[in-house]
Picture 1 (cartoon, one colour):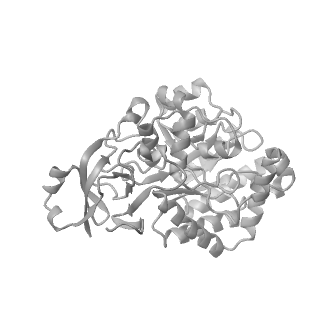
Picture 2 (spheres, one colour):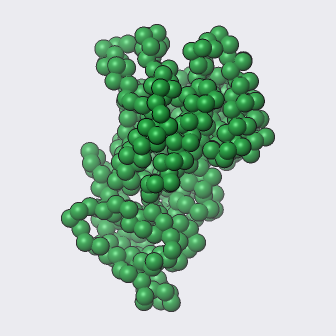
Picture 3 (cartoon, helix red, strand yellow):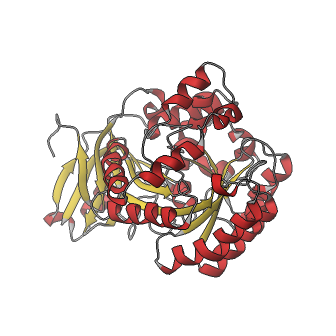
Amino acid sequence: MRRLILNAGQLLTMTGPDRPRCGREMSSLGMIRDGAVLVEDGTILAAGLRELVLKHEAASSARIVDAGGRVVLPGFIDSHSHPVFAGPRLDDFEGRIKGATYSELAERGGGILSTVNGVRGASEKRLADDLAALSQRFVECGTTTLEVKSGYGLDLETELKMLRAVRSAAAHVPLEMVPTFIGAHAVPPELVGRRDEYVRRVCEEMIPRVASESLARFADVFCEKGYFTVEDSGRVFEAAAKAGLGMKIHAEQLSHSGGAALAVKGKASSADHLDCIEQADVEALAAGGTVACLVPGSNYFLGKPYPPARRLIDGGAAVALATDFNPGTCPCWDMRMILSIACTQMKMTPAEALLAVTVNGAHALGLGKTHGSLEPGKKADILCYDARDYREIPYFFGSTGALWVMKNGVIVHHREDIEL
């Protein structure tokens, strides 16, 4: 099917270097006024000035979609989330409000391990059905590609169950899912005090099995005091590389652990959180090409200081933004809220924030050649926002402003009061 999007008041093409954008490059959105996009069979044929796109030989036979002078941009790419679980952690939420610490909640049976117990008891079908239902919430907010982590099983069979549920859900919904295995999320309760044994299981049993069934594109690890050390994380990196998986890492979230430096050394696609980075980490990330993926929604929810986005960008690093959607520390699927937090609390400009959830989000998932910008040959994942100026997207918050969402050239969500 051919579609011709016309009357884009501001068309944000995000054109630029074929790599993660860093430093000042994050301010360039490739904006075209009165722009157009021509799509065929899920792929962009042309994007740019209306007059030039209309000259394409396929334009005359395309079905017209009128953007009505609004902002048109690539669909949001959420490169860090944990949406496979069996229920929200409401006891943790209330306990935290009353002053309980993370360790106190864990002692009461809360935290990650409470979700582990729920997931272990849930069927694969229930996990898949819940994820499929949840996926529509992301799409309604403009997200077209979502990284989906496991990590609430912490044993071989449950981790496989989670990833199979992701595969099952992804086959029936328009939201594209990128599965990530994070068996090294925490030490399971049955192996407390035996971390080395669990790391061995992750590396020698879980990762090879996940890879053999093609259930994940990445492996991840929570490199943090009380969880997994840099040495443990290095072992996970080696096992992932041997199995042909890409690498991501939760780094410098609660304390400085050395995870960011390991990410650069190990050529990880992204190092995520980075609340407690040091100047040497900024310099390493800027020089090494690993994307710094910041997840300020969790900082907001927990009332914690925000990651130093300005220091990273001004230091030349490539920054992505993601929701970190999860049942315990960030129950937010709305990228607009993340953009608002990034601008108001982390002092990212609207342009930098939007670049971070498109181009750099794509590179954080190894999808930079096919996703994240509106260019010929790339996927037709396109978002029309109910705004006349792109700065309105993070300026307003509290509800989605997505007018319609296109995935692979098909409009998969639209507001009921518009005609297409």
